[in-house]
Figure 1 (tube, helix red, strand yellow):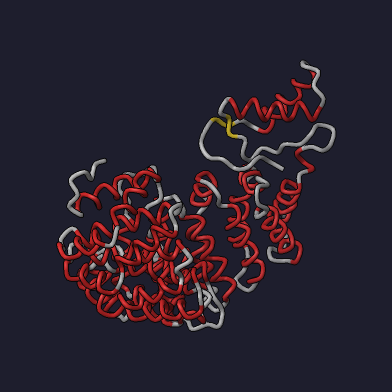
Figure 2: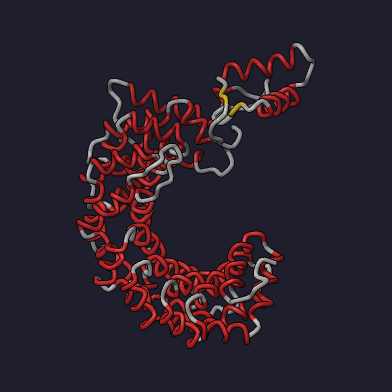
Length: 463
């Protein structure tokens, strides 16, 4: 077992760590358990990253007794043997065992495996498995996804030709749902926080694979496909100043991925992938043009139907995901008007259904805030539908819900800033007290509350 994985900081070799423990026993007279704990605490205080280090009490087992190390050693033997059959039952069993070990939460096993060459080993195994041994390929891909947990493991994957390997396996195994699921899971894991790997996948035309997979009508669900789309379009690599993901979104739109995702959403609550598809579509909707294209493909109508169904069935997860998606689509002024016309009353109905759930209400407030931005007409429609009363009730009922309080302040500001009639209505409804309470209670509300008080026309808004 090892400590939980960390990133950054100084590193230490396994031999050096074992030597520190030995010195604690030999030179300081500590018992084995105390020596191990002291080594961990001392090195951690010194800023040493111990992820991937096998930590075991001397005399109670060594590095070679660690199940991850044992599993890797046997896999290496089978992979390097001249007469080895990559794809036989033993390799599949070992790969599944490695996956289980690495997925054990808090074990640090994934870091131990990566430090000991697991990523390079699995890439080598994948390159040798024939397309006919799909069970072994699935097991290898699942093991790979469990290994890619930090920058170092993802860089090892890229350096070992991992992107090309995985795309090749997906291309050849499209008829196998498990290949698709595990392969897209690897893409999602490998591209997380790594701009260069994202670029590698794009150069391999992964966007065309996505479209092809979305076009397949299957009884199964491939959530990892939507995860891969989302992650490939997320600017999450802190090492780069300007991400290319927005250009990738335009490429996705050009080949028709937004329309295919809308089709996935049309399946409604009967689809287990509805939430994942909604989040993926939100990632694709990176600019006004794409948002408009989604609307032209029936995206707004499809999402509003899902909102209706989530209200009827009490599905909070779908309700939040769909409201969040509509907030993104409302970035287009043309879409704003369509959402207000078709959906404002439905949003009020949704809010009534989930009046006891601040997490849903905060998404509704965020959406109405976007719809009212720079649009006095939409702001008036929102107040007519009851958005003002809804905000006041939500702020009174959930004073401790920070995000809800802030989103209500933002919504109130947007519905009054260019609409004097709304300003009067809101002040007469007693909204000032709610806003001031939020400002005094929650630090994250201070700026939004101050702006709301100012745009309500109050001279002492800064207090």
